[in-house]
Image (cartoon, rainbow, N blue to C red; front, side, top):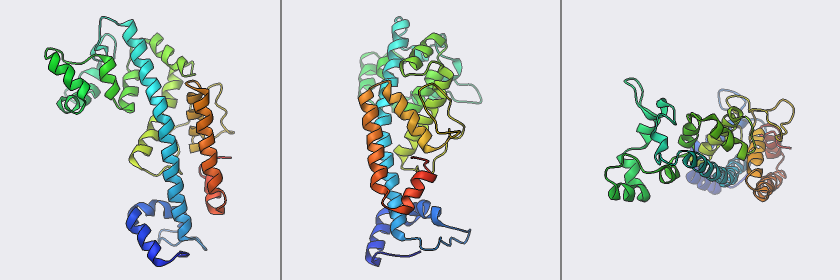
Length: 276
């Protein structure tokens, strides 16, 4: 590797980022199992790739949070309004599949793992509710679901028995078929988790192909790349706010434009991320 900056700066960056973490990025430049690098690989290119990933995670997380908030609101609104006599409907096996609610001898349910003493203690609104209502096993959905993670919320949505409600939620976010909606949202949740935990993002590929829906123009047969996921996020955002969609796509474009002066990084953007 060509250490094209002074050694003091290299030491500073290694101490800041960490040798092991930075290894996830210089792995892209290695040509064999002995960790030899491509000819003319520069340390500054590895650093540039690392910071591209950092900035990309920041942008994606910002806009995925908007999707999560809208999705959460719609689930609470549509289900709670239909089942007004069941404020804690997420724990009612007439409304939600039993596998979400109740544990078996061989498996602990999602609800049991999430809604526990620690969960109540860590969320002031729930803690206050249970102090005021000691006979309640659960707080109402409009309080509780605010503190479910995106992944738990999507899991709950998948287990709602009323297909018409699921259809209403998915249609409100631009997808007519709720099974396809679940496919797309599962990937959005996965990307959100990658961003939240600081995992490597630039070479992300979906475990399975993204569902084809009208309005999302995938490039050719590509339904697995990070760029395909960016298209999905933009589409869902557009059904929440057209301005937020424009802001999102503009932020992505600016980031990639700023990094395109570096030919190595530009090639990663076009060939790995598949953005054009």
